[in-house]
Amino acid sequence: MIGIIFGVIIPYIAFAIFVVGVVYKFIYWAKSAVPLKIPTTSGQQKSLKFIKRTIYDRFDSPYTKWETAVRMILEIFAFRSLLKNTRYYLDRLSQRDARWLWLFAILFHYCLLLVLIRHTKFFLEPVPSFVEMISELEAFKGVFIPSVYVSGVTIIAALFLLWFRRIFLSRERCISLPSDHFALLLLLAIVISGNVMRYFIKVDISAVKGLLLSLMAFNIPQAVEFANSIEPMFYIHFALGSFLLAYFPFSKLMHAGGIFFSPTRNMPNNNRAERHVNPWNPPYKGITWQEYYEAYKDQLDEIAESGYKVKPEVL
Amino acid sequence: MYHKKYVIPLIVVFLALAFSPLIYNAMAKSLGHYPEITKPKGECVESAEWMRANHMLLLQEWRINAIRHGAEGGRIYHSFTYGKEFHASTNTCWECHQDKTVFCDKCHNYVGIKPECWDCHWNPSLEIPVR
Image (tube, rainbow over all chains, first blue to last red; front, side, top):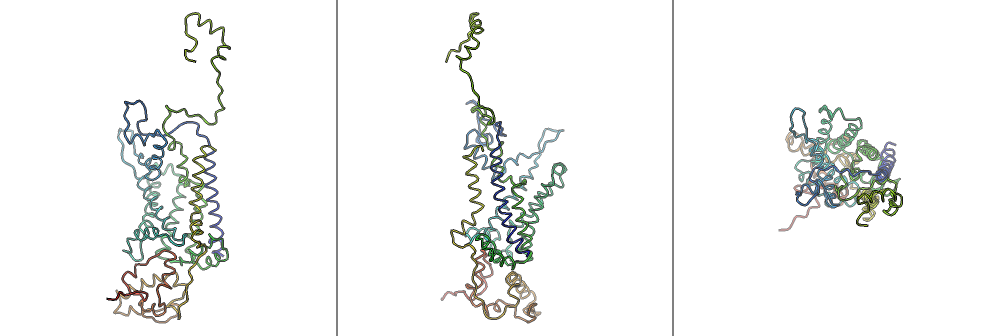
């Protein structure tokens, strides 16, 4: 029974919530207008010719679409905005390096990427050779037996560091909401249960892959058969993973998709060169000079008589 | 919806990534695939259910017992399922599982695992190059 619930029903529901939720969020965000051009920049913006811009300025204060795209890519792969997380004190005008967030975040996210790539061996048949290669590289080709995957262990450390940052630093603790702790604890529970399953309480992983492949084929009887033969330890990991999938679109974890929609990052800083029209403004209808002149004919003529230039020279 | 020319490709890419395992397996025609293993003769040292999940722990225990406690009877393994005694050695395995390629490798390839054991240790499927 536990196999049917946590092995067949909940994964389907969770995956459906995940896909529908993420697409819903994308559409919801795309529907909201950006009334102002608000890129946050930290470089010299494009201006007069004699004001020099270095290569850093080009990507910190992008002017064209391509520069903005490069900035986004750097943001996604190098988390450059977290590098600005330096501390200022009131008593002195100095800054102190407090870039732990960047270090912990990059440690966690790249470990997560490697862990996800390694997990594709449970979803893909035949297993791609690069997945096997990454697994072997991570285990240093079996220096430890059984193979200890570096990313699987590091991700626990990174998550604890991220969590301790929220617990032990007073200001971070002050601004932490329950959802911040919950996301970290849920991820911790998943990675710890995964590591326990890998190194201590073993499960039959060929049946796990059989279950996943038959779920993908919508072969329910076969899936139920596999689900009932797998050890309970697997379901702790699998159910928590399903909960994470279902929780993902409606939580702060959705920053994975939200980064593409953040207006402070995805807009070029060309405020002075291009007019940014607020999309919810009503369509503006101007009047021509002739209409204006007809409306205020008497006053304009009177002003023109006293020697002022009223009529624009170029029409 | 604003910026449709960016958002719609993003949604398409997301959907493609989310369903990539399904697409990959459908293209490889391996949906619902599970390796068929011919059952070897005889009984294993423990129950097949237990062995399927824990054989690597058993081999590790055997290795440690053979290396550290070999002289004090570490090479005798007491099966907790059947209560019998076995010689703790991979040669005991090879008595029944006479071909690694049709038994071990089936599942190991299926889940993409390459045990390093066979870089050094002998197995019956090994082809010794003729001098």
